[in-house]
Image 1: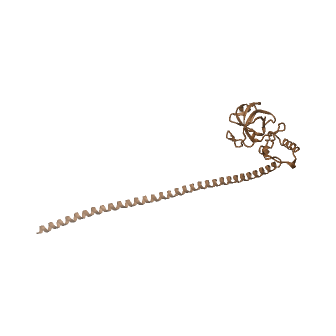
Image 2: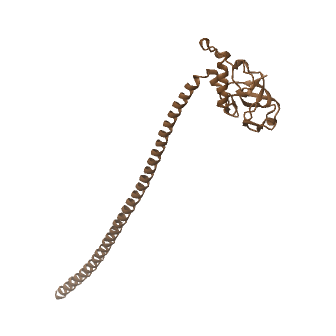
Length: 259
């Protein structure tokens, strides 16, 4: 019986030792886990701090980029505004000049209409062929034969003033198409440089995409009398009278005399 009690005490003591050992091991593991959690917490804090710093840097960079872009756009907008203001000022100036030019042209036309007929004004004589002094002489001569009290204008049969040394054109303009003509030099008045035929008298007709205009007609050169004279309206490959033989050119109407 005594042995049983002793064995029971020994067994109970061994059990306590084992339990104590297990508790010590578990406590150590818990401490290790706690230490590991603390380390992870510290790492997380560091990562959070770094992320906050990166966010601050990104915000600064973003703000800098936005400010730079805004500054560039602001400068560009200011430049465009200045350019627009400049062009608007040019347009306004050009509009004013155009209006003044139209007024001046209208006044000049009214003055011209007082001394010339509408047809003569439409086919005006160029400065290279007749001077203002010659024009004054011709008008003065014509006035000697006109009774102003019986003056009437027939637009279809108004004579066309060419030059003092040549006869007046008695034929209405639309009937001259197909007529044989002698062609005068525009630079040296009274000099015949070629012979040809009038083809078209439409001002809207074009040669090399250039309209004839009211002062020019389309002619074909049949014969050159002054081969080296230059054309007043040269075009592709045709510069002199010699080049123009057999070809169509633009010739000033007042320098095309009917044969």
